[in-house]
Length: 217
Image (tube, rainbow, N blue to C red; front, side, top):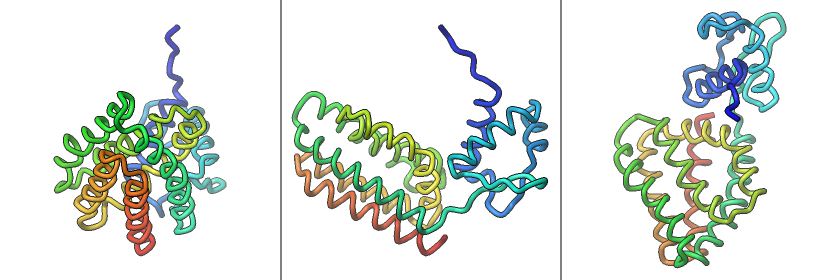
């Protein structure tokens, strides 16, 4: 059966997207009524969506005032990156071990397509959201390759926060270009079946992201 998408889910996706791409700004207070008016819905689905985003640590609610976007702290950045390195380090080794299988080649082809057909075109532009989407697909390929449902669930659970961190880093000068070459290093190691090299390249990629963001939070 085809399920109808509730107003609450639609409002949630709208707000989540707006937080990730920076349309909603930290330091500003937004009212549920303002969002309801913008989307032509009642306040109830907005209130429900705001509560879900609050539970997911995106939003702070101010009693009788509205809500604001929760700032990303250095501690939060470090925790997300640490979790990513742990999960992806394992999945990249698995993919490197199976790089010459049909399944492995399919995963590597996805990563290569992201790099060559999207990231390469966007690296000199300011379209951070599209670049971030390609970045997610690139990194997700090794997660999906393993078929490990716990890795996949954890990756998806962190995905929105990862997107937000990625866009924040991409907004910094020359980050598109740097990130492109860092992704190239990961892919090059995988295509050679070099798990240690892929993990090392991932570590350098994550370290650079951590270093850049820590200076600007």
